[in-house]
Image 1: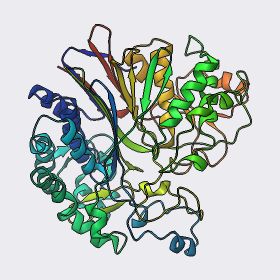
Image 2: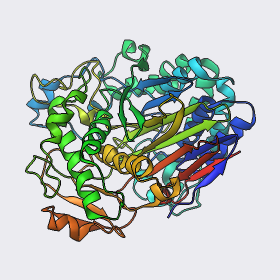
Image 3: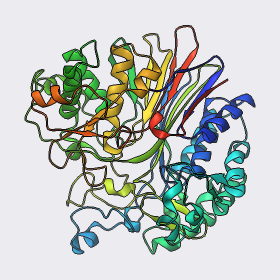
Image 4: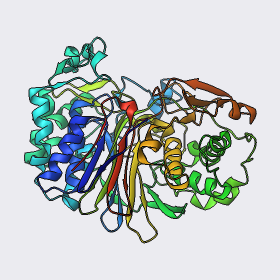
Length: 510
C-alpha cells in the first residue's frame, strides 16, 4: 500500500527521492510548478538513465487557469529510408543497437519550451542540482545498481561500469558538461554543442545539421472528455493518450461497480481498454485525429458479462518516468519523459555518455502506412500524461505512469479508483493492477495473443477466468508501471502518493 502525503504549499512526486527533493527545493526558492518539474526531470536524467534522460522524448500537460499540452517528441532524421530497411529483410523497426530507431531526442527542447512559457527562475539555476549530482556522483538506486556488468561494457557507457550494487557511486561528467552548456547556451549548447556533434557522427548520415537545428517542441491542443463529474485531459496524437479518454467514456457508459475488488470491475475496465485500443496500430500516427467520436459504437462491442471476441494482444514492460508537481498557487504540471525501452536503443553518444532512446520502434515498415518510417516524421508514441479538472475548470489531479503500451490501461484504473470509487491517492497508487499481457518488447499490446496479466494480491483472477479471459498472475511490481498522483482536495490541501513499485520514489511537500 502506498501512503498518502499531504501538503499546503506545493508537492512533487517522482520515481526518485533525489529528484523530488530538487523539485521541492526549487519551490522553496520561489520557483513555480514548471520550474520544479524541469529541476526534477533534470535530476532524473542523471540518476535514472534506465528510464529517461536527455536522449529521450517528453510530453507534458500544464494547468495554469487553462490546460496546455506540450509535445516534445523527436522526428526521424532526413536520412530515414524505409526501403533500405525492407531490403535488409526487416518487417519491423529494429529494436536495439540501431541508430535508425533513434529520432532526434526532444527532451531538451521540452524543457526549453516549458521554461520559456511558464518558468520564473533562470534555466541554469534549475539544472544546477542535476549538474552537481552528475559531476560529484550519486548513489545507484536498487533498479540501477546491477547494470554495470552489462551496460557498463557498451561503447560510450563507461560511466556505468561502477554500478554493481545499490549505493555504488556513479559519476557522469559528460552529462554535467552538457547540462552546463544547455543552461548557459540554451538550445545551441545542446543540439549544436558536444552532444549534437557526437550524434551527427554516430548517425553516419541518418541526421543532418538542419535536423538538429529544428526545434522538436510544439504546444498543441489537448484532448479531453467529461466522465464521472470531471473532465479528464491528455495529449493528442502522435501520443496514444486518446486511448485513456476513449476507454473512460466507454466505461462511464457501462457503469463500473462501486467496489474495485469485484471481478466485474476489472472485467469492464479490461473490455473498455480493448474496445478503445484494438485498432491502435491502424489509426495512430502523427497526423491522426483521435477517434473520440466512436464511443457509442465501441461500447456496443462490450459484453458486460463475458470477454468479447475482439482482436487484442499482450503488453510488456516499458521504461519511462513520470513526475507531477502542484505549486502553492495552484499551477499543476503532469510530465512524462522516456527512453522507450529501458536504456533505450543501448546506443550511447560516445563523448557525453548520454544514452539514446529507441522511440522509432513505433514506426511502421509497411509501405504507405500513415505511420511509415520516413524523414522528419514523428513515430506513434506511448507517452500519455493525464490531468483532471473539476466542473468549474479548477485543477483536481495530475497523474501518470510508465508502462509502454500499458500506460492507458494503468491510468484507466487509477482514474476510475479516484473519481468513480472515491479512493485516496495512497489507495489508488498502491492497489494491485492488471494489464493486457506480455509481448516481447513492451510495445506489442495490439499485435499478438490475448492475455490479461493480474498483479499478485489482486482479487480478480478467478472472476476474470469465469468471464472468458486468459489470466496470468504476476509478481507485484513486476511490469505494472510506476505511477504518481497529486490530488487537490476541495480545501486546497494537496494529497499525493508515489508508487511503491519504484522502491525509492517520493511524494514530498512543503
